[in-house]
Image (cartoon, rainbow, N blue to C red):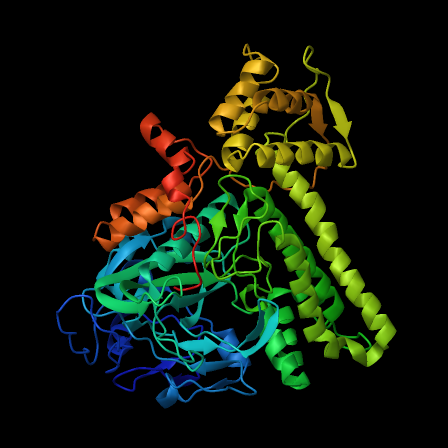
Length: 622
């Protein structure tokens, strides 16, 4: 078998590169610390001195499910990297390589596990019991590399706020390898906030507690709904390891607790990964990256033996990425999710949500809402998101042009670009409509044998036009009366669920929707009554093959910014319970909690005092 030096090993032990299961004495013998003697450079929040880095083995046994983890690091093995571990924290340009060796820098002192996602753990076969073993904390906190694991950072570029930014790369994310999951698929594990890499530039490679909790909760919330997303397995943090941040870029520097999130994705390849190689006119590298991505993640477009060109179908690959991205953005719009930083380096080529920064879920329905205080031009507002998705898809098309132009004249290339963008919109519009209708309680359901009498007979909506009209009226009502988006949709869905047996009058239901949603202004109830008449008369014709937008049903609860702010404040005081309780609710967002008081608190719109910068809106500082 192939062996290579374990990056960051203090003993110089060598480990198998991938695909080997090591157990018993051999596994215990080669389990080593990844920290070497690299101490964190940041000052502690308190006066305690940093403990010295331990040498040699940190644990002598493989325990629980951790013993069964298998790494198959195909990204490392099939794509070249800069393996110079001695320069792992030296910022530099990396040319002709897809990754660079890294060394994790654990949080010191007193690092502890803040939260663990059981549902994400199931993907890898790691239970909550195993997660509370000290070995898991060491692995998730960057102190220990498991056999088969290798530390590296990925190279990529990107357009940031519309402008080409050159090489970016994983500046504070360190990959640990690809773990074979419970279903046989691979999950690339990554530690965000585990120290400097060759792509850190002037950054410290750290992540603060507030951004780590937010990323963790958003990932698991979207995963629980069944929306395409990266996942978050755990948070390790230390109140005694401080990092300095200027949260609003106003010169007000503060010490904040640091944390490390373990993130999971089938791959972390981004739009910007392709852009970097195209920007350097490295066509061979671009082709190798595209071939690798198609081979492992879009095998249906791989070259087939006997074909004349024997090349992957790059154009079909582009269309599928466009389709997935269109559906991704459509789901976000229906959910009221505003990403905040939709640069091309923050878009996955797999069509999943990644890199959760200053995001927000809409409270009051405001299409102009911008969650990122750094976005002065409102480039990434809720209203602008769909068009930005298309813009990013076209940047990916431009990056892959060199692979298409061998047999396509310039005029044909322009037409191909138009077709790729059209694929995005063709996926976006019907999926957005379908997802919104689900939130209104008009999602996939058996058609009633007998139509309800009284309020109105249901009209068929074969082409979607009736659905678009209904949604336009509902969105217009929420905007005009400054109503809470989730409470408006979920209360209207209650009305739809009670048809035709409800004894409550239409006017009473309309007043309930307006009241629950906090609608402001004269005439809100009367306007809602007209909309509910259409809800009652509406019937959407779902094709048998149409899947649900929300696998668990539309959400009752959201990771509202003010709720996360409360959990973060508690964690900063050493109380992990608020984060864990919020995770428990967001892991089942469509299930109503039994305690009435808790249900009301978690469902409520934010109070006025929470609609301020620092809670409702955040900066890129993290």
